[in-house]
Image (cartoon, rainbow, N blue to C red):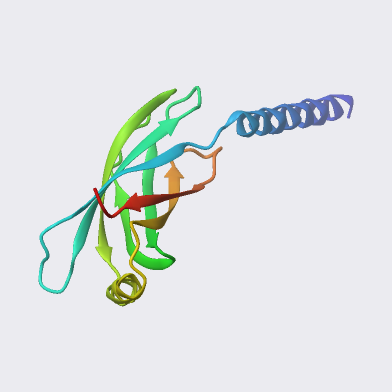
Length: 156
């Protein structure tokens, strides 16, 4: 009975040690940073208009981020314009910035509303919101949700 009691105490201590180690790993994790670097219209295919989105992903952590995939959405002037998903994203090394190119399709309804809005209220720039979900290949880290806001100049 005494051996069984020692066994349970040892297992309990190991579980506590593992749980505190996992919590410590999560607390040291800093969310990556994503910056929009380019937005380029591609030749259309039928009714589908596609865009190339250039990003710079920064990893402020001491371990590399191996991304399984991501989903993303770009809003312009609060209209849902572009969305897409990607896999086979390059690994983001520790303390590094990596350029990433994504492809997205236009939401035609949102695009028409945006054009109507721009014709009614022309402006020199347009505000954007880039929302992303990064799926990290790790059992200790959940998916990361990021947002970046900014403005795109419409004139040179």
